[in-house]
Length: 443
Image (cartoon, rainbow, N blue to C red; front, side):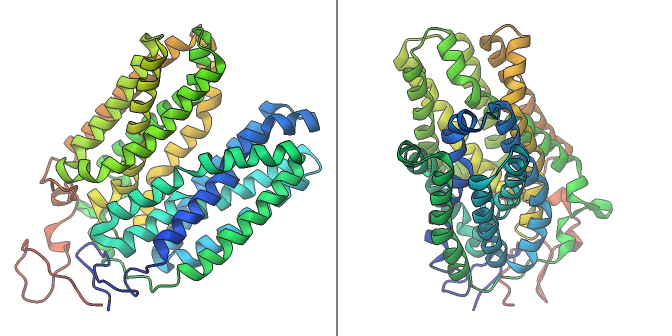
């Protein structure tokens, strides 16, 4: 039988509380979903424009529209996840993803192509990291960091697997047939996997009052939450703009385009390495400390790129370090809600927290390029982006101060809870002293 701790996390061992098939299944579906719905597009975009006559600006705008829809759709999807679990959501999302990719393959005009991407955005919200994080957070409970690390390590391989595979298909097939083949792969891997591997009972969440601040103010309207959302939004914009504009920066400074691409690619390897280190970082640091430190560290690597033009080994080292920071930031955002407000309503709160950052990331390619032109060069752009990361770090620190401090758990516990909720609202078992350690509750 599953047991729940005070945060509503499943702590039992066995199939009911921790389905053994869920973690490997989500690893496989994250690689496939990200690889086909997201990473295939940059590989095929040039061929799409050349074949159809549509401008790359228009096709990229359609792709950015998918990211915007994903951010907005993620909030209602999160509510459904919190109540009913991931099986129906992720299976339906897989079906939508297959339909969207097929519509891309056979889109007769730019309007239909754009509609296909809007549908793909809905599929992203239901199949990408956020629903997977919600499932692992509820099912894995106190061991969620390890499970989240494993699934993000797998997700990090999506571009490694599907970018070259898509390029290989495109060399022998046209872009439309390539998308049709990828849709078939998406259907075969993700639809049955989500339907069959995510069938375990969904552990109930803690009582809803635990997620309200003093005065019955919802957490999503509290200053700590809003300041954290602002920090992650600014930082997400800065980090994504760096990824998109790094190659142009290096090429403008005389780096060979192929070498610049390798610098960017090795940054992806750094993300994988960084994610393997997050569990240790979470164990030995407090939640605000690591949030501010990682955001500022990201800004420091951006500033370094602004000032360093070579040699190539130094640029590679900087890219790997920057990738390590980005990899840790992915897991930081995945655990941001649970570290502060527990696991109940995780999917909804996490979707609300991630929505503005996703929207900012969607606009980063256009805004970053426009800013570079306005500032007369990419080095100046990177200075501005580094400054945004510093501001984001200050917002993250300000969120801690706005909550009035409070106790921090060195393993990443909910440091804000002593001031974010009334002690009288904490769940207790009969006969328990207020504020004493709470034993698991059997549902």
